[in-house]
Image (cartoon, rainbow, N blue to C red; front, side, top):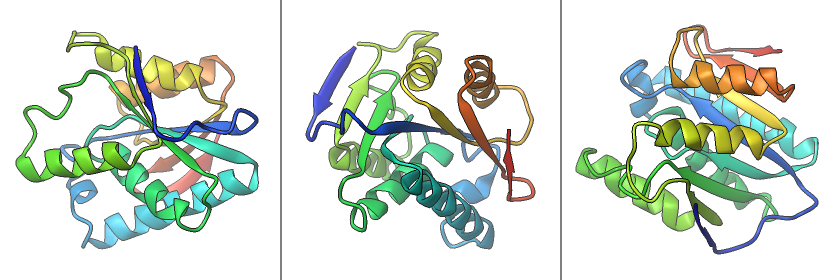
Length: 182
């Protein structure tokens, strides 16, 4: 595992991770001008605000397109209001964005540059590096916020792992854009 720390997280702070779907599942995740995107943005902002009020200062995002990107952008914006917040972008491998569209890869690079901590769980792509990234995020956090619609996949597996470990979990359903707490 490789870590780059531009600013170390507060060792006494609580850690909150994000997981969620990619735009292929919900195209509005890549459309900031859409009403659904703005609604999800506000729901995520509410969750971050609650986490900050609950003492969370360090946030983990997985670096994928969609909900991960959205959460990272929101946290970068929130640091202007709450300068003690730190963002850790957790990459499955260095070449995560290698085959992405140019504009998505550029945004990904900007987010990684603005992160306080950049963690790469594998030195190269493997069939399991995304699972390793998700496991790292769950094992490193005490709260998980998920943009999850009930379908199988990586988000489900991350959520299930968190629930099995007894981690506090909050879900935003992107179909109805409602908040649910488990």
